[in-house]
Image (tube, rainbow, N blue to C red; front, top):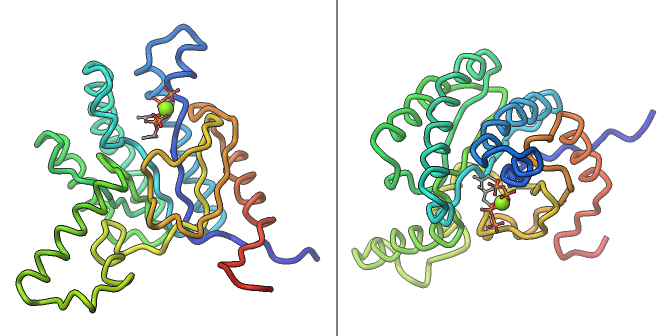
Length: 237
Ligand code: IPE
Ligand code: IPE
Ligand code: MG
């Protein structure tokens, strides 16, 4: 019998390459985003099958607002449509939707759709699907620092008692363990403002596959890659 495979508790994915996938096919960029929905389903199926408990997907960064308006509008429509269409299946699979990022910048309509998806999937026990929407790490950290500073100014928290735990608890990810594995598709080897604090000891993997082409087999490959890694956390074995 082979040694039991180590499974990451939390996998985070930077879903990149939709635009290039579309361009290669002579399609519009938004068609690449639309083609990125099926791989989300595939990643979810593979995560659930392997016993992964948290799957975080980077879907829209604070910087992505700077893209052309039609593309941003198409993405907003796609988020609304997808959460509505997918919710029944997510409920069936026991997937609980959660979000990180600053959603106050989204339109009321988008905020309503997101809140409904969270409510309807609440209590799903198979896995948590954490969508990073209007998310960036520096924005998250700045918001956390403002909250901590307000508590200090109000006399509720002595500055010398601010610890890594205090900071972790003030981040959007307070309820979740740090990611064990971060995957970025499309061959780009950067984090683009994603989970900078939480990624301290994450394993990183950068497959060439463009996000719309990502399959369950790619997710399985990510887990195989992870199982080969030797995590030392600064210690000596
Ligand atoms: C990722 O694909 C999706 C979002 C950032 C919303 P891109 O749209 O960044 O695709 P490329 O990088 O241009 O190929
Ligand atoms: C990161 O991808 C954001 C998401 C996948 C949502 P980008 O395509 O926006 O990042 P850069 O511009 O290549 O760094
Ligand atoms: Mg990109």
